[in-house]
Image 1 (tube, rainbow, N blue to C red):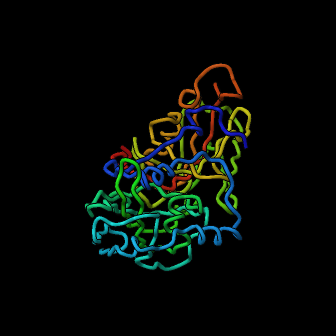
Image 2: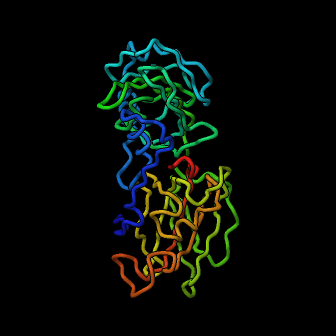
Image 3: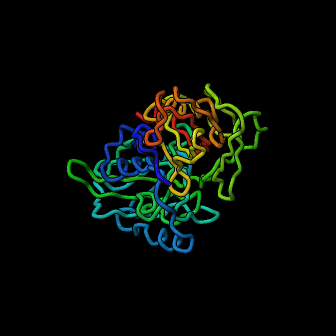
Length: 329
């Protein structure tokens, strides 16, 4: 599927750094930048996923084994160790074993993290817990999360150590694997709205849109197809979605995230206005359908298939996660 050519939509990259106080070069910049996705690429095959992810995890070592962790999984951790900690390589030691099915490559996971200075033991900060959730991430053997957690089970807590980098000290992270997040909206179905396009879902949740007969709409409209039970999306929040876009003019799909990675963006920045309007006020776990006239899409003018100028667009959007605006600074 050819992606939308405009940088204001699917090629817009969002780098979300929930905790500016983390000065870490070792993990936080790489890990948190992983929230951005382009909606391209294919998931690994299930047969290879377990082996690759289990084999990707860093081995435990003297540094990670030397850290004592206190606190419950799902709450900020405290640590004790003899400082300065001698960290020569990335190491990962399991502190608490979770339960359930191990994660596999391609899963969306919710996680939390507490960070500490390896030289002094001082706390650098924490994020991802109940008061400061972050966007779910797709775990893979190549991702920092995959290298820290491997094929862990939900509820697992690990301590990871990272050697000093140029201009920075060694650092210690306590990472909690909270849960696996569905890859499609999980809310309760709502009654269809008369006059709106209809949607059929494949087994994996991917939508197919059927446009109704009649005149093309000239005003923005949206309807909730599934009502989720998560937090409400507000302007400025970071949002993780699956989306499927259809041109009303041509009836063709012009862009979608299905078949690759979910798409993250900041509501109100870097996407067309109608895309933001579609998700603001909706809850995580919801699926919405929105009709965008040119005024809130790619602008009025002569119809142009290359940049979608003048076209009325239909988006089906599954809202998978939200990160409060205050945490994206």
